[in-house]
Image (cartoon, rainbow, N blue to C red; front, side):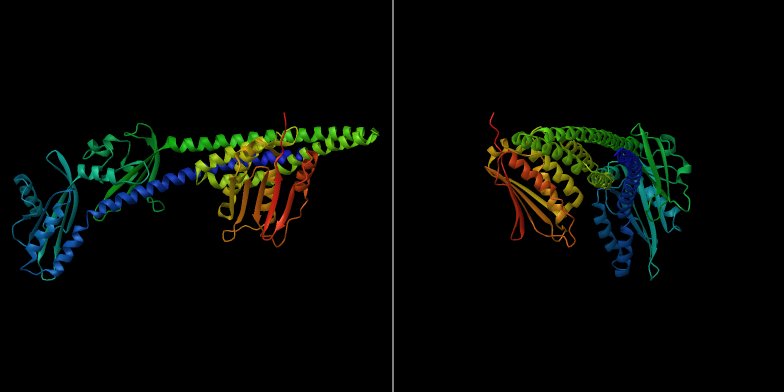
Length: 506
C-alpha cells in the first residue's frame, strides 16, 4: 500500500512538471502563430494596394493608340475614389503628365513631373516620401507595350489614412506591429505620430534584427516596448510585399505568456497536493477500517443473541461498503485518465482546463467524505453527478450523451444511497461501447418517489469482468432502509435502473 502511494505521488509530481513545461512551449508556439498571422495580414493589406499595376497591364493589352489615354483617365478616376489614394497620374510616351483629379496642387504636380523625369529609366519604384506635413507611400512603374508604347504610372498613398484603415480592419490577435523600410523609416505603427520617423532612434530595434540566417527567416528577442512600456517578445521578419525591402515587427506582451504558465503551475500544484492528501487519507481509512472490522468480528463471534449478531453484521457491512467505495472510486485509473484529459486541454483550451481542474477537486472532496448513514439528499447527489458527467464528456466528447429531467421538484429534498448515480452511470460506460456514430445515451429522470436511470444497450464484444459490487451495495442499502422496489434490468434495447427515494422523518 505504501509503495503504491509513493509511486502514485511521484507520478503525479512528474506529470505536473511535464504539464508546466509543455504549457511554456505551447505559449511560445502560440506567440509565434500570432506573429505569423499578423505578418500575413499586413502583407495582404499592403499587397492589395499594388494591384493597380495588373489592371494597367491588362488595359494596355485591350487598348489602342486612339483610346489608350481616355481609358487611362477612366481607370485613374476610379482609383481616385479610394480614400487612401491622395494623388495618381500617368504619362504616355513623351506626352504631358495627366492626373486622376483636378484638385492636385501645383506643388505636387511639379514634384511628380520632376520625379518622372528623374526616374525615366527605372521600371519600378516603391518609396516613402514627405508631402507637406504628411508622409506618403509613392508607387511608380513604367510599362512598355508590344507596340512600343511607353506608359509611366504612379500614385501616392497617405500613410496616416492607411494607419486608420488597418487599425479598424485588423481582426488578428491583439498584439501590436509596426512596419519600416531598409533605412529604418517607419511606414506603419499603432502610434500614428511615429510614422515617418527613424525606427532605430525611437525604439530598441537594431539593424542587426533585420539580418536572418538560412535556417530561420525571422529574428526573435525579448525587449522593452516603447509603445506598451513593458517587456515584450519581439519578432522581426521581412514583409512579403512585391518591389519593397520592408520589415515587420510584431510584439507580444511577455506578461501574458508568463501569467498562463504561472496559472498552470498553480493548478498542477493543487492537483499534486490534493492527490497526496487523498492517498494518505485512504491509507489511514484503510488501516482504521481494518482495525474496526477486526474488532467487530470479535464481537459478532462472542455475541449469542441472533438479533445482536444481525445488527453487528449490518454495521460491519456498512463499514466495509464505505471502505470499498473509497478503494473502488479513488483509484489510479480514474485519476490518471482525468489527468491525461487535463493534459490534452491545457495546450488548447485553458478555460475548460480550469473548469476541469475545479470539478475534479470537488469530485474527490465528495468521495473522501462519505455520509454517516450512507444516504445523501437527492439534490447533493445530482450536483455531484453533473460534475462527474462533465469530466466524462470532456474525455469522450461526442461519444457520450447525458440528459437530466426533473419532473417533481419536491423529490430533491428526499434521499438516495451515497454514489448511487455514479455507480449506475459508470456501469453503463464500463459495459457498453460508445462511438461517434453510435453514442452511449444515458437519461436520468427525477420522479416523485423514484429516480429512473436508463441507457441504450451496446454491449462490448469482450466484456469487462463484473464484480456486481455496485448493484449489491445499492441493494444492501435499500434493504437496510426497508425498501424492496429497487430494480436493475434489461428492457428491450435499454438497461433501466429504478432507485426508490428514501424519506427520513425528523
